Length: 153
Image (tube, rainbow, N blue to C red; front, side):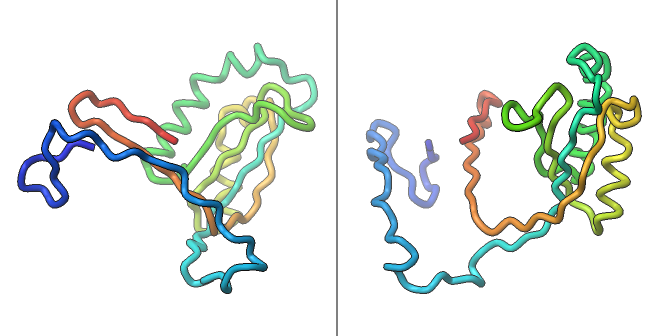
């Protein structure tokens, strides 16, 4: 990270960044103090697991992919989509399989959103809605204001 003079934590530009090392492994739950449960995120979302209907091909999915992505990007811009993407491996995974995590008030609202998916409307896939609570995890994003590039990891 580069900071400007006067910024809190600013360092001279010629100073080499500190080495980053992996933290020491945490103690196992049995060996550590009790988990601070109130500190867990505990935010609720709706996970939509989509599955292709029998006979759906990669070509079928490709024909509707632009409409599907446009639909998702609109939902993202509206603050409805948290995460979304295709499943790439695992039991029963085929073209059209995917997971989307939605912000919605209820399972019925999430199902109504999922039912408007162009893949569903084209008769290419079906879906199931699950309540999903995020308790753990981390997301790191670095955004360069100068170049407009980002890294996700």
